[in-house]
Length: 371
Image (cartoon, rainbow, N blue to C red; front, side, top):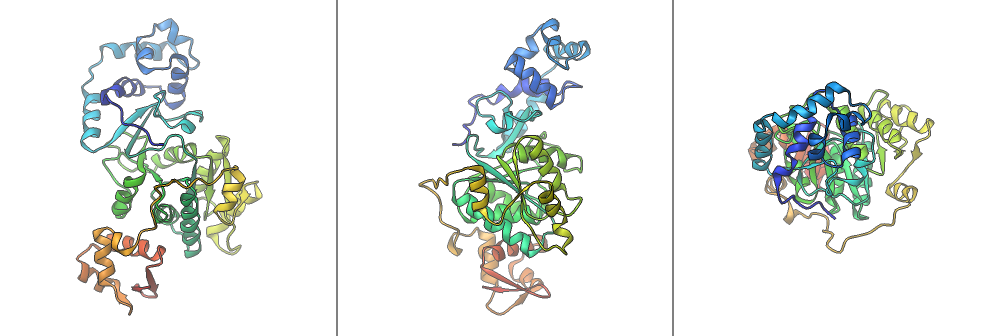
């Protein structure tokens, strides 16, 4: 089931005001919601009532009460901006807020999404190296495809490498995939995944805990990782070096009481050092999607309207253009840029997509041919 759009988009206003109070982070916000159940009730509460909430000091209680006299203009502008961008906001405590996310200690007070956000389905995160090997990309793609074909939502972070392969795999099976962003939804990072993001929105959603104009910044990404793991029953790490951000997601998943899975790799590859450490620390060893499904005790459910894998005649216009420019003989990427008129970065991303789908072969020296 997917979340219904709220009838009144300005219902989110008290949530936006409350989360803007200095000193109220996700943990204190969650405690206030557990006590009062609604952001409006928090703002209207007395100082004495607020002080009974763990972590709410007299100073913070006073700042909350000050919200009654604060201008709504900047928050109304945020709502208006979101509406103009086709973005929906849902607040912690609302019926359409993802249930699994409410169970972590510090769920985001407000969640932004564009597309349709499943809130009661089984979901699994697939994460890994941005500089993934072909081994890692292939396994991420196939694992995501098999999970999605079983009716399981695939969650990742839209990053290069494993993340992109996981999203592509889920889409190839006609499944649902969510991309959790480390920036506001007025921005896209990395920019070459614009086309992939558009495809994700059609069946799943782009998700962010950040305000619309938040730029991609390094501190945002560990913060968004808790959302990736928090939305899921478990996190599968496909490839990760010793200091990979994917290990942060795995640690958060374990702290949230969720399962951690790891794919073994080449013992000589630095890209597998992190996953092997996870295995030594007790992560569940996986080789395919069935291992995840069995470990979580899930029963595959294939919705009756599940789409078939995409074929050439269903490709988006840019992909059709690329496919027509290809030949059975290898063609250099510079020639493909000339034939299609596309930017090199966007073209590389689409070629990667087609390669993962088995429609394109890549040869040394950036030569490509139809499969």
